[in-house]
Structure formats: C-alpha cells, structure tokens
Image (tube, rainbow, N blue to C red; front, side):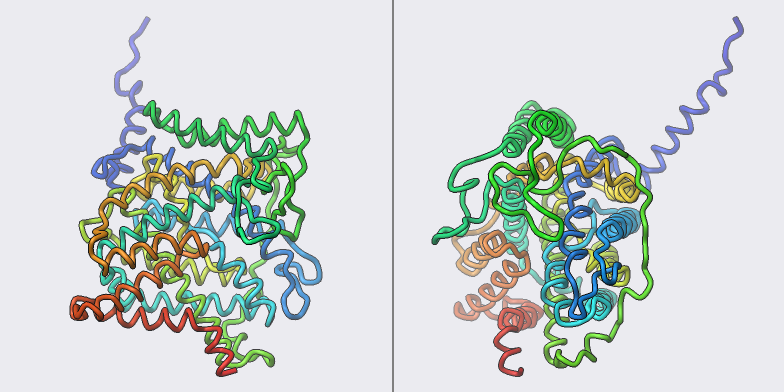
Length: 502
C-alpha cells in the first residue's frame, strides 16, 4: 500500500489550524484566557437566553395600533411574523457588528422596556412612522455624543465603586427577570404585596418544575466544574419541557396581543411542542417605517411633549448601555481597576448605530442586552461569541419555528446563575463611606424594584453628588457627574414638568 503524502493528508487539518489561529489573533482569544470552543458555547448560551425577544417583540409591537388605528408593518391588520423576522434580522446584523468591530461579548436586540414605551407611550399619540422617527433621532443624537467623546467621558467620570454597584444591581435585576419570566415570582392579583411566590404563594404547574430542574442542574454542573454547564442546562430543560408538553398538553399563559396572565400552570411564553415545520421563509418590509421629524408636527402633541418623549428615550438608552457594558466588563474580567473597558468608543458607536437602525427598520431601538452576561458566565470573553450569537439570530429568520420551542422556563435559569455571579462583586464596595454606600445601595435595590436600569443609575448618581456636597467634598465629584445628575432630575420629574408646561 502506497503511503499517503504527508502534505496532502494534512492539508484540511492545516487549513483548520490556520483558521483557528486567525480567529485567535483577530479576537485576542488566547490573550483573554479563552478558546474558540469556549467562545462558541458562550455565544450560543447568550442567544438561547435572549432568543425570547423574537417571540415577545411581536406581542408588544405588532398587536398595538397607533393613534390612527394602524398596525406596525400590517396597516389594518397585525403582522407579527414580519415583526419577528425583522427583529431577528436586525439583532443578528448588529450583534455581528459588535463582535467584529468592538471585540466585546455583547449582543444587541430590540430593547425591552423601550419597545413598550414606544408602543404605549409614543405610538398611542402619533403614527408608527412618527414614533420610529423619534427612535432614529434619539440614536443619531447618541451617536453624535459618542463621536464627540461626551458619552465616553461620562462613562469614565463615574466613580469605580458606583460602577461596581451598577454591576451588582444589574445582577439582581436579571435574576428578578428570570424569576418573573419563569413564573416562579408573579404579580399578585390583589392586596398590599406587589409580587409573591407563584400563584397565591404556591408554586404551580409543570412549567415551574422545568425552571427548577434547569436551575438545579446548572448549579450541580457548575459545582462539578463541567464545561458548558449553562448550555447543557438550557438544552436539558428544553427536552424536559417538550416531554412534559407531550404528556400533559399544557395551555399557554398568553394569547396573541396580550402579555402573559396569572393562570395556574401555564407556559409563560412559547409552548415547547415539536413544530410541524422547521424552516419558514421570512418576510421583510422596510419601506416608510419612520418619519424622522414627524413627531414634531402632530396636532395633539406639543413641541415640549415631543421633546420630553425624545429626552426620555435618550436618557434610558444612554445609561442602560453604560450599566450593561460596565456589568459585562466586570463579570468578564475586561474592566480595569477604575471599571473602564478597552474599545469603549467602538462599543458605544455600535450601540448608538443600533438605536437608530432599530427605529429605521421599524422594530424599536436596539440596545445592548444584559442577557449577554449569561454567555460570559459560560466563558465568553471576546467578540467571537457575539458573532456566533449574531449568526444564530440570522438563522432564526428562517428557523423561527425551531427556536420557538425553547420556553422561558428552560432559558431563564441562566439568568439566575449569572445574577449570583454578578452579585459576588458586592464585597468590593466601601460601605463605610456614606458617599459610596448609600448611592450603591439605592443603585442596587432600585434596578430590580423599578424594573429599570436607568432609574437605579440615576438615583445613585444624584445621591452621590448630594452626599459629597453635604460632606464638603464637592470638589471630588467630576463636573460631568453634576451635569448628568441634573439631567436625571429632569428625567425623574418629566411628568410634572410636562403637566406644568402643558
């Protein structure tokens, strides 16, 4: 038998090795203590943790009529499939940009909270095109603030220990998101207690079993130091959910056009049954989805009211991202001793473009997702993980039926685990310094209590400035902190200001 030529036999292997080396060099994978396999796992975990937005965004946007009674993309009829496909497409493109340009393990998609505000708070007063025009305008303004260096300067002006508090607060926030989305914690139907355990203080339904199983499995795998613990947990919980659904045929907790309701034992979002088809051809329509200055020519919306709507969007987007980038940087070990991260300018540029792109494509402002921390918890340290997440989103435009089988209850255990990991940073806060301790405390508790990252940041900034002034240490506060705290005061008082000027 003739021997196989050494060079020919190794050609495919050499090509693979060369590709791996190129990826390693471009994304600095080894330099950051990671590996290609680790980045792929992290990217997939991030995707599975935030893929719910493809199903949830249509529920929020597609079924809400604007002031003229028209539906987004659909005119007289809702168009949820088009909203879902566009949500996945834009998230995929922007997340790949974040990974390839900024080299940061951060994924982007339509911002939760912001999309509700756009639908309920803005589109109810004007056309969808005018509402999305405000979103585009907000993104362009933030981009200018980044290019002029203002946004980066604000990021660096925040005291390091306040940045740690932001990270810890976001950890508690995403843990609460996980508990609520899984139905483990729910709003109470009546009485003085706003939230409680399950339904009437009791855990009910097989979906809750899926959530508990997934959480305990991930914990057990992490204790045993098993690689891919979070990804394995999500996969195993999904399989269990499919089996349970096949056995008991459990009804969902939601109907199209309405958020999940308090029903005994229903799935919170998405029924984990095996789909009849795996591939679906997506439809897109990007024409006429935004009118850049349309909000300023609406008869029933004053100029001041339109400006305040724009300001609310601007401030929320601006500081949500600051908090998210800070938290990811601390968790991934990519932040220096002052809490600053490399490539912050590029990160914020991509994020600003994302806000404008979301409005231009009609699916609301796209922003950095704190669920990216789940991928970081799985080991993601570079932008390669974001590229993987982005590719998965692009595939989702065709594979939406397959992705839809993953219920909240199978994906949200990752948020609980990551919340624990981020909470561990609390030991680095100087609680003996009132100027740090009180702002840190308010930042940490108000994020989950108000379900809003910006509210926690704003309360922390304002109290830090006030306490330092009372202590006679006002000179220690960066001038930008005074400016930003003043803007936050306007943000918090926007409703009475609007009524007064009304």
